[in-house]
Length: 288
Image 1 (tube, one colour):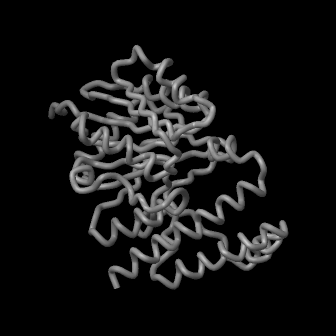
Image 2 (tube, helix red, strand yellow):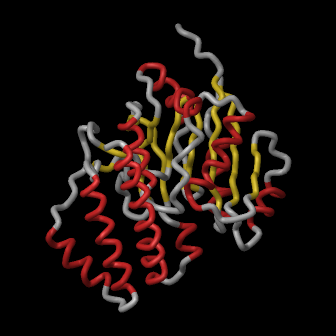
Image 3 (cartoon, helix red, strand yellow):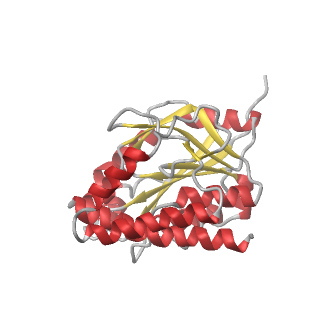
């Protein structure tokens, strides 16, 4: 029987406002089997305005394998995650770095051990687990690749711009409903060939960690998965969907806590999606 060498696993939890979610997330990680695993958890507080980052610092002060980092400003999804990613890369010598939302829970006891077993049989640069929504019970991972050329992204960006303008008249949902009636329902991905991964849990192997300093940091929020997919294809990285490991996702808890009004939430989404789509357009044009 082959003995598995001890692996260093760093899990980065991006925190914003919803402290109970973060504590539940970290506690679920504590419960995982850690045989032959050196587990380190890095919590990044994205300048939560309610001082919950400092509360987490106090809450986990006696946990040697938990590091709480406090950002002085809200850097958004990618840059916030990159704080934890680069801390782990510099100080923890990780074989794997996992970037997880604070509103996920892991109940599968052998999650980490099985992840390592899968990797030893079928290496990857980037991977994602099965992600089950606690809202509707559906698997959110993976999703089909939507953008194959610059024009695809530009069409989507135009929609974001139109919806953003219409949101000031509060008729954006009306138009979206009309457009959605004409769109074919996206079929669940079953072949896992041309797909991208959901951002609630991204797994990076040592090969990726050695080459990159995290995610593309030009966005604030949204479309990170599209950009990561493009970079993976551009740089010939192996992206894998791991159906045998599972997490549960509460969906947008931090955004909902920050933007309690649905209209404000939609407008926030449109605004940042316009910018993020431009980042992707610029990346794609550089390779033309």
